[in-house]
Image (cartoon, rainbow, N blue to C red; front, side, top):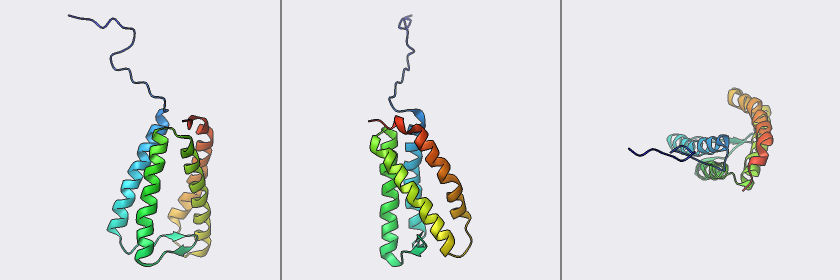
Length: 137
């Protein structure tokens, strides 16, 4: 019976990308898939952006194309620890915070989702800033 005489275990996985960025990338790719399923199931949905809703099919196609595409690209960037992915997370997060704040002021309640965004996204930004040096390739 042969024994493994090497000092490393048989399943040695070395990743240059930190595990939290891999998890973030996977979550963003899943978010893109969830976006597509929700958008396709709700063809009459008009997403408010800065308190305005994009009406009709043009708005629906815009949401169907832009949001899942963003999630897929950001997920890939985090998964591969690309430097540009850091900015791809920070800039849209700032945009989302601003849009949620304006929509919260302009639109009628309920504001559960907007309030959740306003509470969680700044925490996410702090986390991204803390981990920014790991977006390196």
